Image (cartoon, rainbow, N blue to C red; front, side):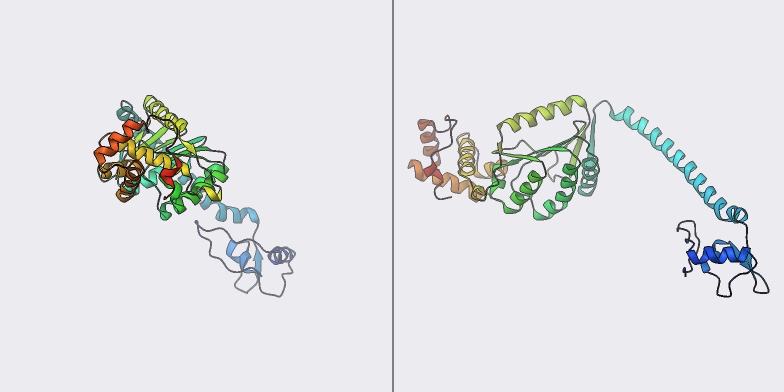
Length: 332
C-alpha cells in the first residue's frame, strides 16, 4: 500500500503503486474492491469518493488539466525568469569587460572571497594547472581541504605541475600530500627559493598575491594574455631548475636537501642578507638559518660572519655547480 503524500510544486508527485492500478481498473468496471482505496489514487485525483462513499474513477485527460497545468505554468515562469537573469548578467558582463579589458587585472579582497574564487576557478580547470607554493610546509588543514579537489582534477585528466621549496622535504604532512597527488599523476618539484605564490588555470587566468598588501588578504586575478604568458615563462624557468621529489622511504631528508639549502643560505648570507630575511625568502625558521651558518663556520673554521663570507669566496664554494661536501651535512 502506498503512503499519503501532499502534492506541492517543489516536491515530487507520489508514485502509483501496483495495488492502485489494479484498484483503478476494477473501479472502471463498476466493481471497485471492498478494501480501502489506495491513498495515491485519491491524492492524485484519479478517483473521487462520492457522498454515498462510492469510489468514482476520473478519466486521465481530466486529471491532466488539474495535475499538469500548474506545473507547466511554473516551468514557463521559471524559463522566463532564467532568460531575464541571463540577459541581466550579459549586460553587466559587457560593462565589466569594457572597463576591465584595458588592464586584464582584477583585485580580489578578503580571505573568504579569495578562497571561494580560487575554488571556483580551479574546480573548473579543463587542461592544465600550474602552482608555485613558497614558504615551506603547508598546514594539515589546508592540505586536507586541497587534496580531494586536486585528486578530482587529476582523475579528470588535468595536467598539474607544482613547485615547492626544498624545505617541504622535511615536512611530513606536506610530503605525504605530495606523494598522494604524484601517485594520481601530478608532477612535483622543489627549489631553494620560489618567486612567490602563483596559480595558473588553463593558461587563461592567473592568481598572484598583491605585493603592496602586507596582510596577504588581497589577490590579483590576471586575464591579460601577455601577462599570463610572462608568468608562465617565469614558472617554466623555475621548473627547469627545480628538482623532482623522490618518495623512497630513505629520501625523506636526502643529502640534496641539506646541501642545496645550505648553498642557498650561504649565497644569500654572502650577498649581505640578515638571518631573518634569508628565513623569509627560503621558507624556514631563523633558527634553522643560524644553524646552517654555524655548521658552515665550523666546517671552514671561521670565527665571524665576515670571515665566513671571505673563506667561502676564497674556496669558491658557491662557484661550483656541485653540492657542498657531504661532511657539511653529517649532523643534520
